[in-house]
Amino acid sequence: MKRLLTINALAATIAIGSFPVFADQGAGFTVTPGIGYYTFDNDRELDNHVFGSIGLGYQFANPWSIEFLYLRGDTEAELTSEADVLMEQFRLDGLYHFPRQENWQTYLAAGLGDNQYSDSFDAEETILNAGGGLKYFFRDNVALRSDLRLIHSLDEEDLDVALTLGLNILLGGTTTAAAKPAPMPEKKMIEDNDQDGVPDDRDNCLQTPTGAPVDNLGCALDSDNDGVIDLRDQCPDSAAGARVDETGCYIKLLEDREVRLNVQFANNSDVVTPQFYSEVERVASFMREYPGTSVVVQGHTDDRGSAAYNQQLSERRARAVAAVLVEQFNVDSSRVSAIGYGEERPLVDNDTAENRAKNRRVVAVVKAQVETIAQ
Image (cartoon, rainbow, N blue to C red):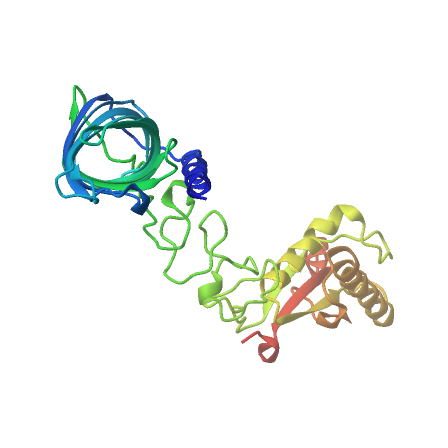
C-alpha cells in the first residue's frame, strides 16, 4: 500500500512538472548547504533525527536543474538507546522551477538514491523521492531554500519524510526573475486641438467650434449646405441656393425688385425661343436666392396697332415668359403670375422708332412675401 501511494505521488509530480510553464533562469553551478529534520516510517523503529546536507548541482538556462545531494545524520534504534545508527543518504534529483513572483519561486523535484546505515545498524536500501520546495531570493544569486521530500524505500516499502532548510547559491551565473510582460509601447499622443474627436493629422478643419457635430474629416456639418454650420443654423431646411443670414435663415427682400428682360419676339409672335432662355434664367436665379418672393411678369407694347390687340399680345408674351420660368427653370407656379399692359405704360413717348423699341418690353417684378419667409 505504501509503495502504491509513493508511485501515485511520483506520477502526480511528473504530470504537474510536464505542464508548459517556463521560468527565466540563469545558468550555472549551484551549492546548497542545509540542515533538516528526518522523520522515519513507524515500521523502521528508528528515532527521528536532525541531519546536515550539502547539495551540488547545475542550473540550466531554463526551468530545469539537476542536483546531487549528500545527507548525514545520527539516530538511534528504538529497541535500545545504546544502538547508535549513522545514516547517510546519496541522491540524484531533477528539479523543475516555476516562474518567479518577485522574490519567490516554487519548484517540484524527484529523484532516486541510496540510504546507508552503519555502526550498530548495518543496512543499505534504494530509495525514490518526490516533493518540492520554495526559494526566497534576497540576492540575485542567493536564495533561502526550504524543501519537503517523501522518501520511499524500494527494499523496505517504507515511506519517510525529510524537511530541509538551506542556502542555495548560484556560481558562475545569475538568476533572473520570471520574465515580466514587455511594457506596452507608449501611445503616441495625437493632438486634437479643436477637441472634435478627429486627430489633427487627418482633420481638414482644425478650428471647428466647440460642440459642433463634424464629419469624418473634422469639418462641421452643414446639412442644408447653406454655408451656416448646423450648430448655429436656426433654419436647418433652407432651400438649395437660397441666400441666408448668419443664423441660416432666409434673407428678407424688403422691397420689390424689377428685372428687365431682353427677350425679343418675332412679329405678332408670343414664342420665347431658346436663345433667350438665359435672360429668363436671371429671374429664376434671383428667386432661388430669395425663396420668400413671387414674381409678376409684365408685358408691354408700343402704340402701333389697336389698343385691344396690343393688350392681348402683351398678355400672351408675359404668359410665355412665365411658362419658361416654371417649365424650364422649375420655379413653383404658385410664385409666378403674368399680366399684360399693352400700350398703357410706355417708358418714353412713342415718337421715334428707337423710343417705340424701348416701350416694347417684358419686365419681371420680384415682390417680397414677408409672411412666407422661414423663421
